[in-house]
Amino acid sequence: MEGGKTVDAPVTLDRIPLYVRAGSIIPMGPDMEYAAEKPADPIELRIYRGADARFTLYEDENDTYNYEKGATQQFNSNGTRPPKPHHRRPPWHLSRNAASRQFKVVFVAESHGAGIGATAKANREVSYEGKTVTVKP
Image (cartoon, rainbow, N blue to C red; front, top):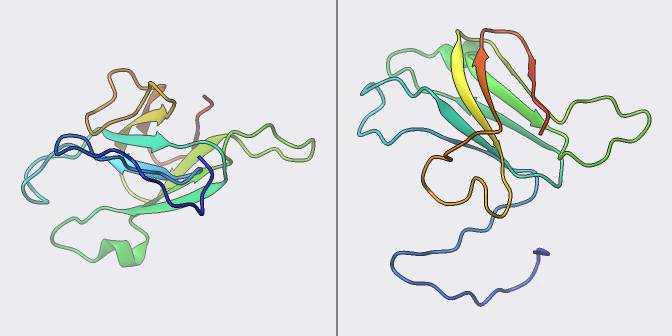
């Protein structure tokens, strides 16, 4: 849907539309009551194609200021548009300065990765161990 317009969409109490900008990267974790309740693994990363994106995820450790020292995760996407001949960047990659982590990467499509629940089948599951990981749709 093209942006910059007013949209009149039907809404019910159990269904509220959510519009996401092309190129967005949205992390989704398990429902938790408080930060230290349980590990947040795996985090589902929903990648909305169509534009370049960069996103930094800070996870609250609940008792440190490690984010000030780089304990964050950096996610990048080139929008999975056809690359230009000189364009060598992969469709998606992540780099992180902290310990290992589990991610489920989901390239969102009309019938895949929509809604508030976890996606049944991720495009790729990644065990991140501190080195840059590249994922193609």
